[in-house]
Image 1 (cartoon, rainbow, N blue to C red):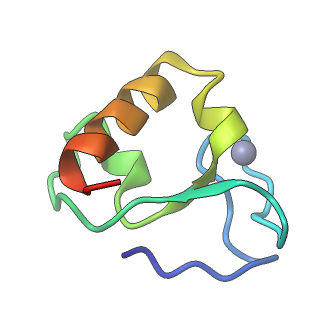
Image 2: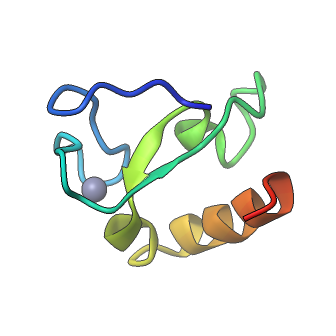
Length: 70
Ligand SMILES: [Zn+2]
């Protein structure tokens, strides 16, 4: 699972820090391929609201569901 530091790690979409109390989606380390379209989320955390605002983010959320049994 991604290791993020609250108030330090940045959301790859909005570039703002991930703060305590926000709805943050954690992505595991799932690829080492920099050409992977989801590479930006690899081993990262992102705001759920940001993911839901972008097409790639929505796809990443679907992709994440196939990776982890939520
Ligand atoms: Zn964000």
